[in-house]
Image 1 (cartoon, one colour):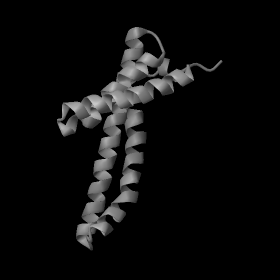
Image 2 (tube, one colour; image 1 turned 60 degrees about the horizontal axis):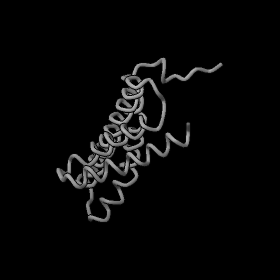
Image 3 (cartoon, helix red, strand yellow; image 1 turned 90 degrees about the vertical axis):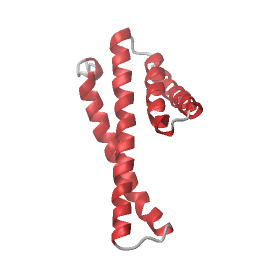
Image 4 (cartoon, rainbow, N blue to C red; image 1 turned 30 degrees about the horizontal axis):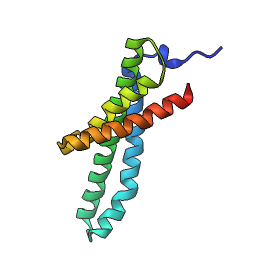
Length: 129
């Protein structure tokens, strides 16, 4: 009776929804780790508040970016292939992993992270199907 919403909702809507959810989780993570990191660096006052705000911004943006890249790639591949299997997660995970490591500008790290995230996403998709 229930139909899968992934087949009805456009890929861009799924991407925006995942960016908002995971980006918010990243911002909360930055809000939790920021004060600790600021204290270990000995920051006080305005410098500490700036450090915490920057930590929230960085974690929220990074998590949202990875979630958006993964969900738009996963959904696009699923619509292109017209199949819902573990290969979609493999490709989406590779794209998201490459997006995470791209800022390092080190090809071994990009390839390693893409492979690692890809394997985890494929395993998660395989266990669901």
